[in-house]
Structure formats: C-alpha cells, structure tokens
Length: 160
Ligand SMILES: [Zn+2]
Image (cartoon, rainbow, N blue to C red):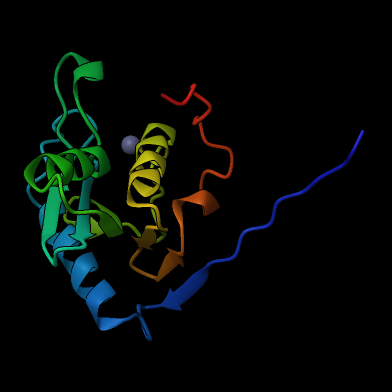
C-alpha cells in the first residue's frame, strides 16, 4: 500500500484587489449575466463567463425548469454555447459568480461536480489549463486549472 496525497494551490484576492484586468472584466461579465438568470425555484442567480482563444467572451446564466433535472447550470450553458458557437476556439478562462436577491454572495460559489467534469473535458480539448476565477463579494479565488477542483477526472475511456 502506498499512502498518497494531493495538494492544490490557488490565489485569493480580497475585494478583487490585484486581480488581472482581463480576469476582472470576465468576472464582471459573469456578474452581469447572473442578472439574466432564470431561477424562480432556487432564487439563486449564477453567472458564468468564458474567455476563448479567439478573444471572444461568452457569458451565460443558470436556467431552471419546473422539471428540475431539465435545468442547467450557468457554467455548462456558457461552455456548451461557447463550443457550439466557436467550435474552433478553445477555452482559456472561466469566471463564475452567484447572487441572491441582487446581492453577490459573500464567499465564492464553486462549480458543481457535473460542471467540473465538463470543464475538465474542455481543458482536455484545449490541451492546456483553463483558469478558473470564482468571485465572491469579499474575496475571489483563482485556480490555474480545473484540475485543482477535480483532480481525479473521468477520462479513462478507450482511445479511438
Ligand atoms: Zn453545475
């Protein structure tokens, strides 16, 4: 038996001080997108914005449905739309934020497990890390790769 461990590193910016200007723009686009959220059941408004290798930014929000599983998280709406709209481009960064009653949540709201898996595959498609920026009102965290949030990824399908 071998005992192993994993460590992750991330940056934390108090009140977004020191955050790269392009990443700040991405976070602001996510905050704006959250206002377009359709979340009448959870009242939890999430926004995500994706920066692509072609310079485009795609922003989206969570979309709920009375048949709960039919809804989709902001992160996946943004990622899937970005890949559908610009299939030749790769994702370089994603910013995520959430708000309740128009107020940004104090602490970062992390992507759910399913969104982490989708981000991981997007990173594999890109062949390089996707920066993850998760914004809260009090502080924002930044990971250099989705691997920091999902170190063990489902990716063991037979190669074709
Ligand atoms: Zn999700």
